Image (cartoon, rainbow, N blue to C red; front, side, top):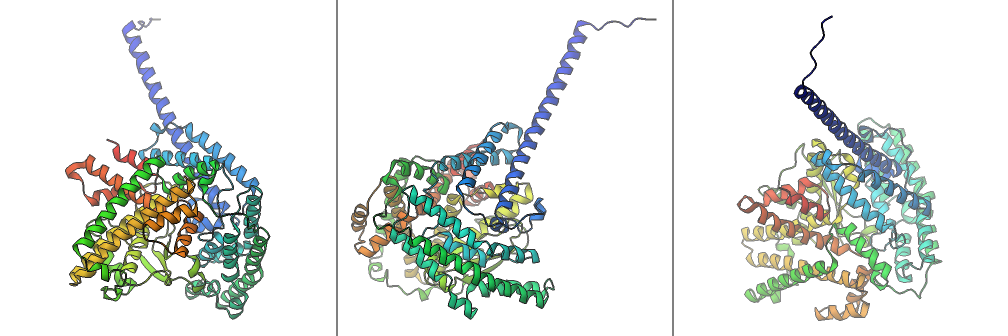
Length: 605
């Protein structure tokens, strides 16, 4: 037998090198795929768990859950319990541990960005969990006692299952409100209960939002809207007349026997908690409250700036706006007479549809177009029984997989016609919340964004954008008025823009003073007096609202200032290649984010 020649040292070294290279590449690909699979598992599990644990949230997030692997679920209205809160905290810790073990360099750019956002969001949520009783789900201004009926009234019926899910959730409202009462009782035991005056405001809402008289007449909005939502399914043949009548009967029965008693029981339970010795104050009166406020600020605004830096930003912007108002008043002294008594009937448009059409036309060269089919917009008035408890206007966010039908609600008792309606529709519609939602949902999810991204909420990103474009709409309005030869009204529109900015800036500064520095009502009233607000009722109303709604004004105004800061950074980085259109594309394409992550994304080479 002939022997083979042995390999030379050089050949052996080469063979070993090839083997090691192959092994390294294989290991790299294996690790890469493993990280990708683990991130897919984490985000998919989060989505499924969050959606199936709260059917109301799922319905407003996913129009067709089966397309996201969610087939069998039990309709659930998520109720509070201290045990579930601890379980959620433990689940968050486990998720963070799993996320930190992933090598983000092995993820796609989109997934790596999502990983960063998710990690930061969960870390802050975990920090806030250390202060469980500082949250207020029954706030007199934005509590679930006024928000739940709106969510029920806007619950879309696309299929027969949507109707049965809705009725199942309605049947759980007694347990839901009972759990919120339990939370308030635990807050009382922890020494963090609302003052008696705030509890009375909530009880008044419980007494008026739904009444036996309205239900007997069949005129309550949860009765009329239910029937309205059934009609398209009836016309399409999805329901028979007999089925529709049976559903209407069931809805009326549940409203009378479950929801109405639930409100009565909540109101009665709150009476027993009233304590006249508790005074209304901000979070800043205690060290724990201050710490909670700092985490709440991150959660609500998405800004990671130190509070002292935020205060400096606000002071600089206030000075800028004050000078702008002073310059306008100096240039047009006649405005001293006209401002405040102007007749808004001179505004060229009075109809909401006309205003939205004008806004859509004016944004074309400065904002990217949303892809896909046309978008239907319905502008509806808020039910009179909810006018006292809802914002001047709000947009019902469309699900990620159904953006064709959109609704904007106008509170006619708080939103006049003319200029204010025009800028409100810009804030809620185009190029505000509606446009922002439709644009991102259609572009991001069709390009591979993970649906779990929808679990992250950033008030500053969304409300900051809406305020940013609202101020742009004041400029559009001034241009429109000049086109109509209404030059004085155009200047008034400019003045209104700066006045609104200055007011929101002031209230944002007061928010920090009340909730971080512990300012009392008397201290705030003295500051307001310096700005010409001397009426005690007005001062009390301003202080009360800010004390009850920490970070609410900052969510809007600091978000707006963070966008301006990003815009200035983009101008610096992009130089001659900067345009508003390009900046708006960057902001919208990144999607809902905290501002630290947005800045890092902008600064990437």
